[in-house]
Amino acid sequence: MAETPLWEVFIRPRNGLAHKHVGSLHAADAVMALQAARDVYTRRGEGNSVWVVPSSAITASDPDHAGEMFEPTGDKIYRHPTFYDIPDEVGHM
Amino acid sequence: MHEALLEIADDCLVLGHRLSEWCGHAPMLEEDLALPNMALDLIGVARGLYARAGEIEGKGRGEDDLAYFRGEREFRNCLLVERPNGDFAATMLRQLYFGAFMEPFWRAAAASTDDVVRGIAGKAAKEVAYHIRHAGEWVIRLGDGTEESAARMAHAVEAHHRYSGELFESSRAARAAEAAGVLPRRSEMRAEWDRVIGMVFVEAGLTVPEGVFMQTGGRAGLHGEDLGHMLAEMQSVARAHPGAVW
Image: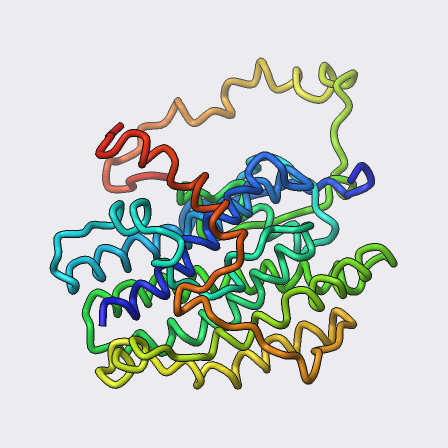
């Protein structure tokens, strides 16, 4: 089964939340990948919706570029909404 | 009446145990989880039916007594479910054959006159719908796959088809349960079974065999030798340590 394609699995735990990456698996095609995702990753009621994406379709950032990609945000603390008082009535944002 | 429930419970337990034999031996990790998932669905259904059968029988036998302390001749499962696993193709075909019968059966049993059976039916119908989907997709891919996989799937059909007729037979006990509205009439599942198997086979490039002599006898306790071996293993711990708990 060495040539069986790899898939990334995303699960949405509840309505209203976003799909979250939970892991990967091998399957011959999209239909079988969805079934395998159900069998491997939702055995304990983890979700109510599953996405599978071919791993080959993902473009990943280069770890060697991590400095220029992510460090410039480090000193821009004013982007964090910690300077504002949020009224209680607004609730969870 | 309780014997009719035992027949279906035995089907589910025996097939569930057969599937559990794949645990750790499946061709890929994903199936190593998928097969025991299905096994646990079936064993869960068997437990509910054993408990209800024991209650109706009224002799104080519980699910463990019925599963572990009856001999081979007392088991009432159909012959299909006790067939050895064979290769992965044979296992998937057996699952499809059984599922395609049980899905309409449980849907119809949702109108049972027995409260417990109604409850089990609602849950089991959803579980078995997934079993059909999963086994069906594999039958299609293997049947329409490589030369090797197609040959193995065709061989599985040849080996298993003769056990499909028994699914639709109602024993005397089953007929009593059907007359009382506790369980649906098995012969009425035929049209849906033919439809599902026909649909999968067309996509899989398989042919439904015709004029096959159908084997029967499981409902009367007349099993193949393989069931005895399976039960010996399945029952050994419970018999070596009766009443043990953990």
